[in-house]
Image 1 (spheres, helix red, strand yellow):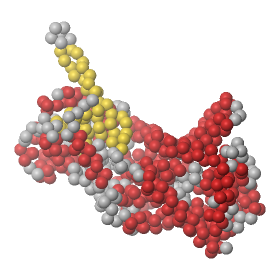
Image 2 (tube, rainbow, N blue to C red; image 1 turned 135 degrees about the vertical axis):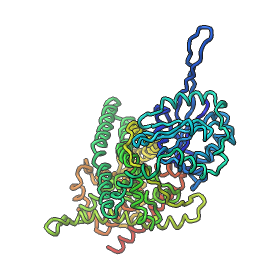
Image 3 (cartoon, rainbow, N blue to C red; image 1 turned 90 degrees about the vertical axis):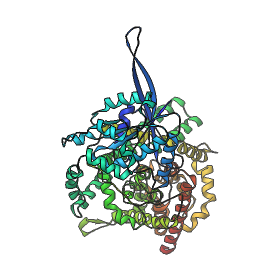
Image 4 (spheres, helix red, strand yellow; image 1 turned 180 degrees about the horizontal axis):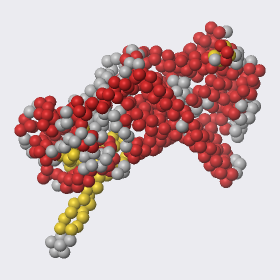
Length: 623
């Protein structure tokens, strides 16, 4: 299948144009070793030919693979990710299967887009490839009664030019027809030499923009008016906090019913399968390992999809760039980027979607540091653990007429501890990776896009695809670990956890937890909670012969207190769970996003050792 390469700068409407040309018939892949996504879809070209014998017009259909390359401002890369993307683009230009280079321009910021476009045209000419230019977002120009003379611009550039709006579909039909003809017979539309091609890229872009582009101050007038409010040191800060509060609440509140529904659906399906299988080994395996293990993983899918939706709305509207600008200065002190704020914030719901949200960070080093420190945010899976141990250790006492509760204050301390630990670790990782060729840093360069209303169809596709990609990437490793944990807990006594291999391992490693004042039962609970932190509550409930411990936090807390869990041991256990990376789904996501197992498992071991040392120190001080 012949190929059409789609290139352009960020925020130019390229992805929306890609969706319109492929009809969302696409697949997503990553370049090897990087997080840059490469999307491909099918573009159907139609050619009309006349039959001289019958006089009828025949339609010949030919399919092309349309490949959407990551947005870039120049063919000179700033980072390793960009370098690999550009290297792949240049290699594709040399491919005999490549028919056309489709270069997308932002019609509202033509001069800036033309610099990159002229670079692409020159490289394409060297490889004897045909170039087609699209001037996207012409609907914005029509609001100001500005018309583009695409025929004259095409003559100046020496390549076909189409004025389109991927959002309102203006010119899309003409582009599809024209691109069909050009893709089928590309040799007839090669780049023609013109006077403008003799100029430098910057000079040529300035000349063309002066003749054809709308004045920048006309387009930016509305944007600057809104920015004066949203980037104001006072009102902008308030608006930022309100928007981030909305994001934070949506991840918790909106996802809760969907997560409950997912959990109920898995439970119902497990009950049906269990009823069909009857009692026995196969039934226990399906119920506990398959539905229990994968169920604790699939329940996070609604959170990921809602996070993708909200971030997509903020990104498409143009606000996400403003939020990054507001946060950049305080976070840069710790070696982070302004874009790190969204992953850190959403990490309090779940580290998995937060790690995926870090893809928006432009610097490979800052993206690397952000992804590795996101697990230190106190996610919702820690809440049952915190609630249980705080109920045991901290009295339910209120001060200042009930405005300040001691247990609530302890919750705040735990969350604040996670944030401070993440910032300290970020500073250390930033210094450790200085000078790394693999993890290059790059300056914080941010273009503030125009404010626009989102386009719902591709946003919906992006939301659905985020859930699908998460299941594909993390699902297999989750299943393997679930199988191992279930096998160790089930044998040799058919599900008797206290006399299982897992229990034997817990008693074998008990000396490791003795310096924290914890016995083998807590060791087993910590081991099992590697699958999901909240499993600590259920496992301790089993150990203390309680049923439905997850729904009876207070009763389990009373049993732990009666068993003699000391303040020193309880605080040590809390300290361990604040820092330790005990979530196999998070490790799997880190491995998938960072591309190397050593980073994911290195973080798991490093945070485990750090958590253990901090817990031991807390126990020694308090005891």
